[in-house]
Amino acid sequence: MIGIDVGGANLKVVNDGGAHLHYCPLWEKAPVTTLLNQYVTAPDEPAAVVMSGELADCFDDKMEGISFIVKAVKDAFHAARFYGTDGKFHDSAAPQLAAANWLASADYLRGEFPDALLVDIGSTTTDIIPLTRFESLTGLTDLQRLQNGYLIYTGLLRGNIATRLQSVLLDGVITPVSSEYFAASADAHLVLGHITPAQYTGDTPDKKEKTKAAALRRLARIVCADLDEIGTDGAYRIAEQFWENQRGLICDGVQRIAAVTGARHILVGGIGASLFAGELGGTDLSKELGSCADALPAFAVRELAMRGGYF
Image 1 (cartoon, rainbow, N blue to C red):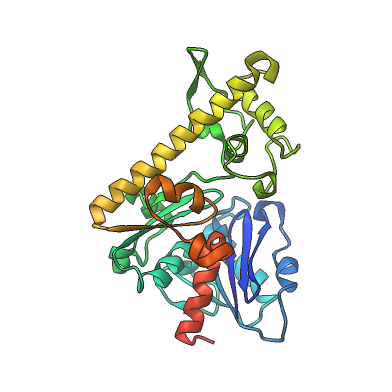
Image 2: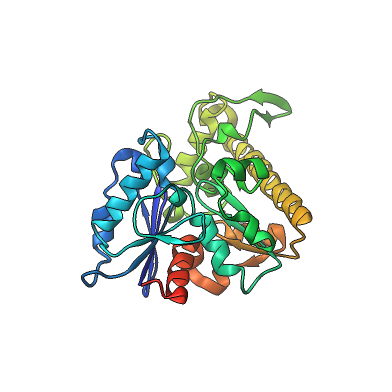
């Protein structure tokens, strides 16, 4: 049995060998089937699948994206079944398959942690999922999750830093930032030592090196400067102010949802698990699940399929 999570930028696979992550931007005609073929070990091998990549702007609408992903996966795993926001498995493309990956994680964890709040901090987004209210979660779209505070569009790697900062303080001067895509979240986290260059998956904004020196140069451009204009310290201050903003946004959101839903325990998964578990006073799922915590929906949908005997 294999678990698969097809996101807009990343393809995550979980099998008996652990978790496997591939940078796979759908808007660049990513070879989903080719990447999956390397995990096929037998004809009609079962695969349990979730997705969120249907929102990629290469598709005119979500159903076009869903159909593309279903076909791409089935071309590799003919017996694949797809988990939907109705909490059920489907054999073919259906509207319920759109962005159901977060619900699979909740469905898997709710039995053991019924009083918990799950916070899954990924490369692009942060999911805040009250396991205390699982029945009310089924059927929710990403639009509704944004409106409820269950989805925050900030993550550890992708995303324009300028979407979080309107200005920064440099040498006591309030300095507006450029809205150009000069630096990504990963640049700030790399500079601050939260991630390693190897964990900087995906393209850099300038398609150049994934080093601290290169990240500092990209951060300086946010204020339309070269590094020699604001110095290394100035670039570090930009990274620190981004981190303060992002940390506050996520922590405030988690605290608010925990208070509203009565959650008494916080579980933290995703690539940001180790960083945010301490900030939130929660349980770091990577200590329990290892690398599978970085691919939690793929791991969860695999476990749900095996537990329920859907194959």
